Length: 285
Image 1 (cartoon, helix red, strand yellow):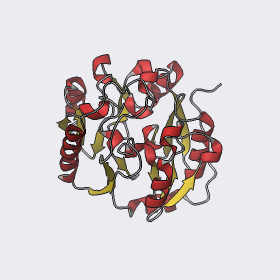
Image 2: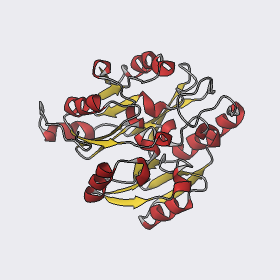
Image 3: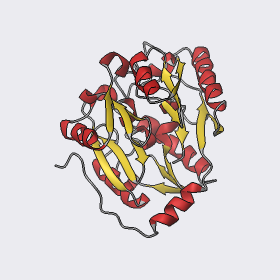
């Protein structure tokens, strides 16, 4: 089995048309207020009904993240959390590329009801693409769009087959990365692109061949185990601004050497559910 695979491009439009369409998209970040955030089930190693989040503190932490992003030069749109206890993690709702929104198809039944709300909301401004017939896919939690590549993690939440199909749908080359540590069940929990050339990652969470592909094609910076388990890779990046989980000082040092302005946030109540700053945001591409 190929661990890193490329899908054949089937272009229906020219690259110049695609880039032109992207150029006129207003950069935007979506967030979803944690009105009903809670731990009511266990669907990843981080979740425990015995370690429930403090909702008041979680909302304060969310608002701190919101106000940090609001000060940047980017449009910010907030939804109400009316879908499920986990829908605050809006990154998992899908991925946006140009005028398309690829809707997630969650692996676990506990989150499947979310898709109805996401479809209804994002259909107002995007063409919603349903990939549920191809298998499970968990949105920006498992995927990035970098240049002309659809980079997708698989192994726990997203199926290899659907990852390849999405590349074809978006007319991008697919790069598939195999995840091998269930603590890092989504790609964005163990890898983050700082820009189109530089990334940070926690190598033990990714298969050997996937790791080698990344090292051969990007400037890769390993992060220490303790910061990986603090969700250090689950960061928010916009231009030269970076939001990190409080205490991720090694990652901050890497970012500052690349001229990033670093903002620390304490998102302890969301880490209890297996999410960090990036999980709480969805950015158009």
